[in-house]
Length: 183
Image (cartoon, rainbow, N blue to C red; front, side, top):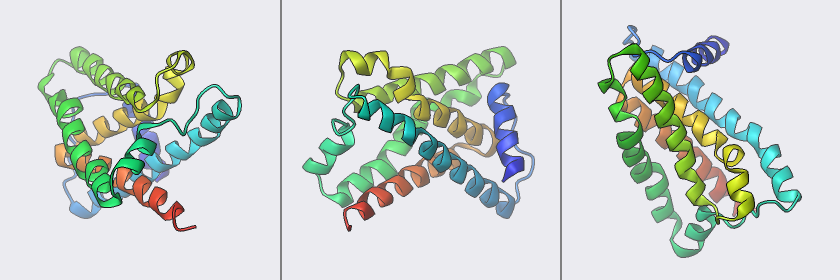
């Protein structure tokens, strides 16, 4: 996992349009699992920051689109949306076009732009207030970084893999959210 982590960091510093030459399925599944774990740990790393922001009364994290969805829709509908529909559409919009940009300099710019837009789009999950606008870079930092990670796996393994990673990430978060209701 350590090797995958450093490969990912190196790639995010200097993204290049280059597929992984190792097409062995077991190799890819293993790397996929490591990257999924890295994504989940990344999300957990931001939890204390968000807790501080909420404790200071700067942003009410309960006023979030997911909270609204939980009130309006059944869990199976939310799960379907978060784990199937959103990953497919978001990957088609934000990751599918990446391989169209063959020039290394252009690719690098487009890679970062798509990751940033992907992150900033998620500000719409919050009730927009002045504090939310000021704190936007922090509030969407996890999604922005995830946009880069999903871009990495898309370029290295293919679009289906980025859809799968996105779906597994969202699915894990949904299952954790739903399991919290059991207690």
